[in-house]
Image (cartoon, rainbow, N blue to C red; front, top):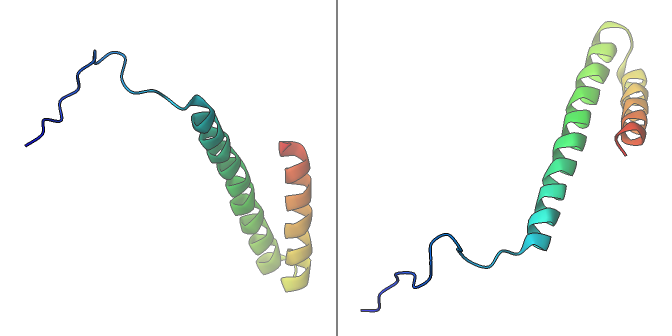
Length: 74
């Protein structure tokens, strides 16, 4: 059987693809920012629609919150 033990020093490890790491991290941050914005906007719009308005006014509020949020988060 072949041995699968590393031959080099442990501290060096494998070659890292830092460009891919940066793209993955940027994608995660984007998903976290806009996902949080979406959840907050949908909660506010649902509460507004339930207590003060109806479906159409809540939808308009949701779109408005999303547009302002995307503008701010850029």
